[in-house]
Length: 233
Ligand SMILES: [Zn+2]
Image (cartoon, rainbow, N blue to C red; front, side, top):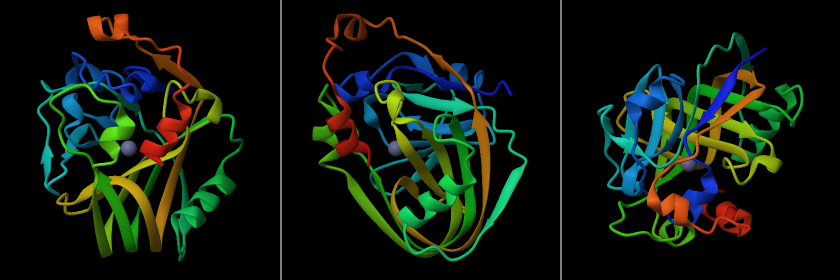
């Protein structure tokens, strides 16, 4: 196994309000065809599936992003899973997490996660575009929530161990995209009618460190885990 998770910038920089880097989506594609993240100025949630970037904006719209756009934070991999597991009715995100956990060999690896199915209910959020640098936890306080019933779609994301909490969002981090590509967001809760789970164990992490002035001058010695958990879970 030598699958890699590529992280474009440590998440603690994003948590501290560095919402802009010059890493293009084209560069990100060189590291994977599957993943999630956000866009410069925190302009919506990102889903990358089958090599196409979707921008899930806070007004509820979804658009395909130009690869010339940039991101302050993206996590991607080359998704190659051939391990598919049928999922039956699950009444909450917690139940889904338990089902995925049972299928994982160990919580100490990273996993790419894809769940396709019919969701009896689903709650997702997106964040409004920011004009200035602000800590993520403040911005997340202005998040816009969307609720859906009986919606077909897929969840795209990762499990990463807690000890990686300054590099990536620890635990389960999933973004939703509807099958008709018209709705989506960062997953808050869901109940599943039926679906299929694909899991990809990953045992390598590649982390890029930005060279922007903001990043080079930031004080990244603070423990941002509490803020991260508040903003992302
Ligand atoms: Zn997210």
